[in-house]
Amino acid sequence: MRDPYEVLGVQRDASAAAIKSAYRKLAKKHHPDANKNDPKAAARFAEVNSANEILGDEAKRKQFDRGEIDAEGKPRFQGFPGGGGARGGRAGAGGGFEQYNFRSGGAGFGAGGGAGFEDILNSMFGGAAGMRGGARGGGAGFDFDSGGFAPDLDQSVTMTVTLEEAAKGSEKRVRLPSGKELNVKIPAGVGPGQQIRLKGQGESAPGHRPGDLLITVNYAPHPHFKVDGSDLRLELPITLYEAVLGAKVRVPTLTGAIELSIPKNTSSGRIFRLKGKGLPKNGAAGDLFVTTRIVLPDGHDADLEALMTKWRDSHPYHPRSDLG
Image (tube, rainbow, N blue to C red):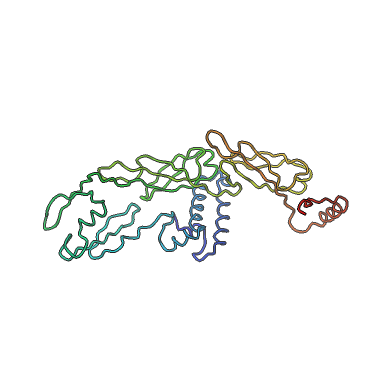
């Protein structure tokens, strides 16, 4: 993944408010609902959310700035503590280079004055690695016998999905730390924090069965809905005349917009329940709770003010009378 600062288009010294503002703007721009004819919109939306997961969290942002985690939020290899002298290493799973520091002790591996090669092997493999063989060309040749050693070959990654993808199910591409990419089927109704296990798609080691890939699902923030278990909540702006006179208004849902009848004399804060329009769960579906919010026109409207003045003088009422 690209540098999260680059993804959100902010400077490294940007304030938390600037990051939040940039994220909201990009999330709205790239949301799949607003780009139904663009097959790449979902990938851009997911990238924006992944960047915000790091920069929008103060602790994670500091870790990233210090180089402790990468652009995907995964820990970077920091090297083994201590050690010195000759260096050896191996290529890491992410394409980087993991460096091991060995102390030769002066006369060669295993000599006095420091940790020998056998000691390091025992510390790395829990004493289960047996060494066989002898000197070859003046050096030591080693053969490793697992002898019951069971390395942890499982890999864990996170995947961010939209509420629409979680509700309907979908297929997404996930990138592993090794650089390999896989298409993963997301089942309908998957919840935040749930894991999808792909057998045999983890790391591999000679003499051992491949590990599994564990994918933890996260929900991307939605521009309209708030998640409440399997239910969804939505604030619906309505005009003053719609609240007074009643109206039919369009309400977004995860499966498309529907019409909601607003009765006459509807107050701001009234809640309407749309059954079955929430998230799937255990073969059923949650509900969508719509809360009305009366919005007045921008600026000063002399006609409206005159009307309200006349109405106030002729029809006074006291909605706060029970507050004392």
